[in-house]
Each structure stands twice: as structure tokens, then as C-alpha cells.
Length: 170
Image (cartoon, rainbow, N blue to C red; front, top):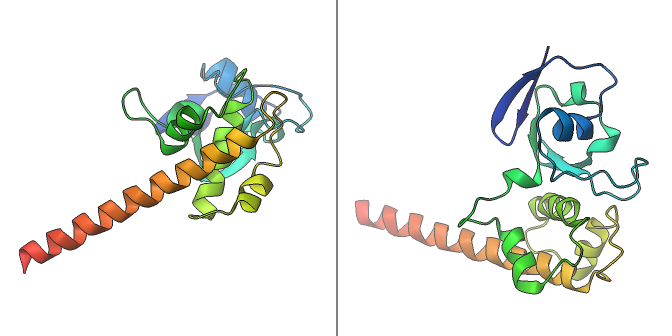
């Protein structure tokens, strides 16, 4: 029996030792936002976060994720409360066909956890592992930069609110 923490929910499944994380997410848990594109780890459509790091789920055995926190695109935001990367993609038109988008978003979230104010070069380098055949990446890069600005603004507002709250107690 394998226990997996996916998007904050604990799942217990009887799995084969050879089961890939991508197949368990899609076939066992019904989280079909994680796409299977190439089956060779080249395209990145299957990218998820494992303990906050972007990982191609077609290269990871599901049993390796036991004890880790796995986040799929379904775990990013909710209706009416989108994640900043989802808002960035919306605002900057960062998708066309949408097939690669979940993987790109997950890679971008991993990148933004590493770089709070990424340069264009860092964004492009951070997204190298995810192929998009439709967009030419221009709007994707703008979407990630947009998300970085949104995160920065949110953090700044939270810090200002916390400082104001401390001032109220004095």
C-alpha cells in the first residue's frame, strides 16, 4: 500500500513498483491535467511539483513520491481564486492549444519558488524542459513575469499588513 499526498489530499493505493507517477495521477487519481506527451521525458507536459520542485512525472516512479508533497495543476488555484501563474497566463495570453500549459505552469511555479524576480533569461532557462509547439514562448515568458510581479505585490501587501498589525498592538 502506497500513501501519496497529492494537492493536500492523502491517497492510499495498491500500486505496482513500476507504476509511473504520471499514470497514477491520471489513471488512479483522475487528475488528467497532468498530460502525457512524449513518453520519453522530452516534452515536459507531465511536469508536477514534488516537494516544491518541478519534476517530469513520467520519469518518477509513484512509490518514490511516498512521503512527499505532490502538486498538480489542479492544485494551483480554485475558481474565483486563481494562482498568480494562472492569472499571468490569462492576462498575457500565454497559451494557444493548451496541451503543454499545465506542464509549463508547473515548471514556472517551481521557477518562481527559486527566483522571486526572475530575469527574462532565467525564465527562458527555467522553461527549457517544457516544449510548446504553438506559442513561440513570447507570451509564456510574459505570463511568468506577470506572475512574478503578482507574487511580489501580494508579498509586499502582506508584509505591510503585518507591520501595520504590529504597530496597532504597540
